Image (cartoon, protein in one colour):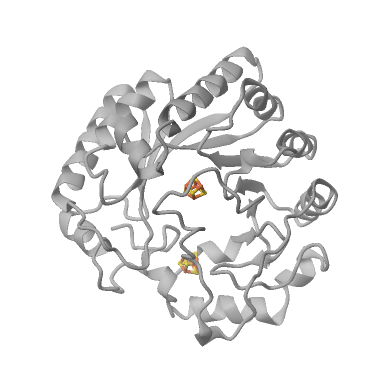
Length: 325
Ligand code: SF4
Ligand code: SF4
């Protein structure tokens, strides 16, 4: 089995507490049905754990992309060192961030270390973004960081870094897709993705028709501005599909299996290797990635999902296979 994409969670710490956060809401909690060990995070990996163990293990196992995530990764004081080591390792790498800690120097380090993509979380106009993110400075700080990134990119002759705005569509921002496209155009961002929120229990009403019309308008606007736009995991959601996705009843209408776990895995801040849903298959600081990947538990997990047995988290997961609804 080979893994092409490693989602490396550098930390679970974050300066924000967004109400919809997957990490803080325990979205991926282990379910007893599989009787596999859960991951438990007590300590974060050190700089040397990451640069001397995790990155080399990924390179050795022919991983194509390391995607840094969290938590908010820019909270780590060693982030520039990690960026530089990824650049030296000649592996593709990217990160997602709320950008509130993105200084000019961090932006330059990321661009100079050949970062392939930065996924910037923006969920609406200033007022809506700040409300959803629970911080009155979230929008302005994010835009400041975005400016540092675009500036660093424009100053580099060799940079191929893509800057992508990722907007999580959820109750409270149904109308924002066209605003996000206008914002992308203003800041010269050429890619926007709209992600339908993953939530175990939706407790707020979602305005499906409003969201449907807004997504349609956003796609039209994006084609005028020549911006690539995607909606996932439902690429062309109808009003009914949006209503069902955001309904309280856990319908198994969308899950058509999962290819994601065949070539993706997560490594948590303590080094646990997780195929999905916080089941730990071993720790990369103690065992080789190759041994973990070929372990019995890993196969048990993969086989269970591949037999189209969705776990609760699969029913609203942004990585599921959906028959392209
Ligand atoms: S910024 Fe991201 S990691 Fe932090 S609380 Fe919000 S969604 Fe979670
Ligand atoms: S669909 Fe796949 S990636 Fe999503 S929760 Fe299920 S196993 Fe995990």
